[in-house]
Image 1 (cartoon, rainbow, N blue to C red):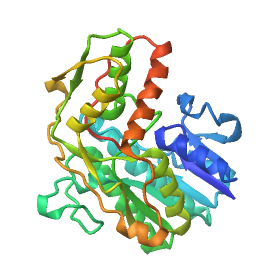
Image 2: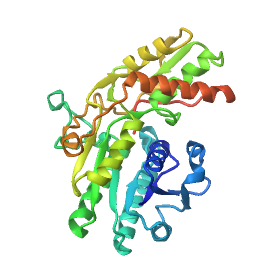
Image 3: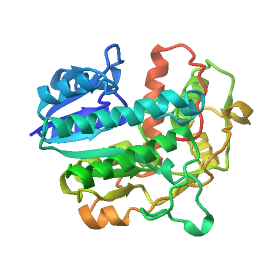
Image 4: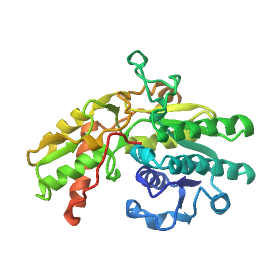
Length: 331
């Protein structure tokens, strides 16, 4: 069976490619030219890369015509929440127009493919304590330009299902992390700092943002398994939460890393890491998806963080100090 992954060179996309290859799929991936491919190092010789840009409708249709997919996994997006504050227009255009061109291409070419659209828990935004845990029926109160763009993607997927019968399944994924997580995201940024502290490349101080924010973390390897089940067994037109059902504060993440670190370090809050508005708690319920597919997370958060730290330890062996700031929030 042929599958197309948009954003295949990204964090989740690369893990999804490996998962699908192991299951015997013929995997195509849409990437922009000059996109870094290091995440695909373990499988680049086994995937068929198509170069194009979802913001260009002709480029998108050409990729669809060449791949003739039976399953489409739409993961490509500007996915870093803080960037959306600095570049709201680019975030909206990339995420919304890119998906619109993909759905239009599928419709125009009459591609008979089931489509999984990777939406986000950030869509829920402001959640009152009495509304926890978050279910798919919670109100959408987005608190960032990124979240607004994902609401639009979510609605586009539903509209194309209702209007044109495209078999779109939407997944609202809560925070996910693990090896290869981009360095700007909170768990990866903290792990990278610890790896550099261990090697003496920076002073033994972990710089952090809001320690009280609580996030529901799922291992990326569990998430891509969920994406596959959503595409193959999910009900078209439906939306499903992908989450662990357990929230960890940023402070808890820090303490876990202190326990995993080979050297002690202090913790210092950096005002530059605080957002204009922040979602205080993201805690999801995945019952609807479990009842449909039987999926549930299997990898403990402690193992996820240990594997992520080991990944950044390996990166630190060959790199100088990084210096970028990471913040709370993982797509």
